[in-house]
Length: 268
Ligand code: SF4
Image (cartoon, rainbow, N blue to C red; front, side, top):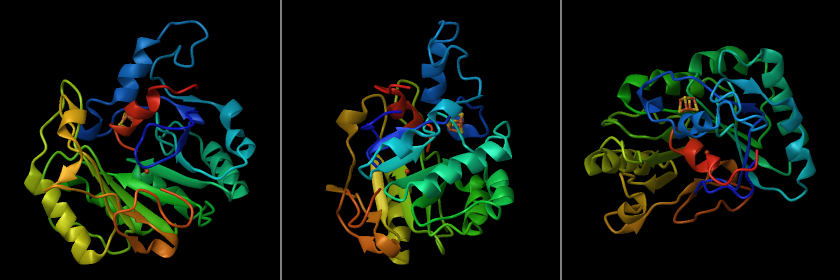
């Protein structure tokens, strides 16, 4: 658990599952994997088994102990809908979220098929925001699956953006986060891709959050587009709130670039 989190769009991370496996090109440089594998074989370390998926039932109740409400990113170093997470365990995670209305939970997955399969059997209180992570137009099928989920707030994490994303199906989507890949091996992002996504969000009145350009020196690259930061977030009822880094009522989302940030400074 990391509280606070270094991720721009959340307050804290909660990891009832650790470890994952790659499903698409966006996972290629998963920092969570790099981080976890450093500790493989270290006795007693939370990542003693590296990035192998592991359930962490002892972490399930952590959000109940936080009295003050916060934005909680669920499984920053895994994917709750991974095929090796039993249905019953997914339900236990959702039960905790139902029992903690003081928090706003942000769940993000690349496993859209399993999400679609389980969605009807899960509770969807307003404090659970559900998102899918997409790296290029080839994975729009994840959006189609998300739109069928009865969450009050559905969001897209387009990170790392690896190609143009024309004709994004934004109907039924309440938030879009965009970011470039960072690090030594980062793949390039083009300004026209980002501007194209922003224009589509503006036209559809979907809050747009630009996290970073990324690259080898992401601090230097910054997070402005044509001289302006974009930190829109969904407010209560999904209202558009311009230029805020925090929503008005309640809170603020998983990608290969998020897992890494969460990993830093986390006390597991
Ligand atoms: S980027 Fe996400 S889905 Fe891909 S391997 Fe890492 S944690 Fe799993």
